[in-house]
Image 1 (cartoon, rainbow, N blue to C red):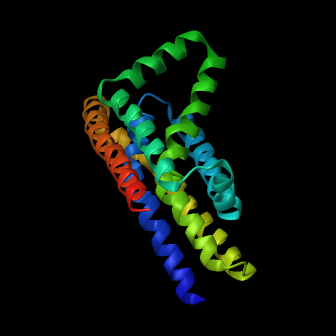
Image 2: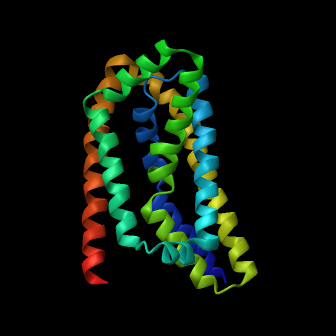
Length: 210
């Protein structure tokens, strides 16, 4: 039992990587206010937790019923992530944020909700790797309610650590300033593009191996 919990905690921490998400969160929310960044952090964390919990409960039969394989899911996540990285490198996200602000408060709220869902909740937090890990860990529990309860508790703790990192990221934003944020956004965009390509490569490789 203890080995299962330790394995689940280590797997989710490595796959989700809360510390590694901090700079990505800053890059995606570069032009948001402090209050907006806090709202996006809470929303994305709640959404990611709900997605991971659902996939732990019914993920395997759901994907099987839809005829979707895990490699296909990984490739799709990589392609979507690559689109976000393109926007970060060429400042398209900042341009859209300013345009949305000019359209009014309602459009601004919609944009905040959109950012909370994509790319923060999906695929950065509840990405193909995390979803796959949840499905596999839930399968290893073999219907044991205690193990499943422990898995959900561990998932909650990992997502909570992501939230804590997001909320603390604002301090880094102040230290960087306008120029530092502009440089960081483009640098992280390149890193995010590489991560997206890796998702696609892993998905293609797994598709041919299975």
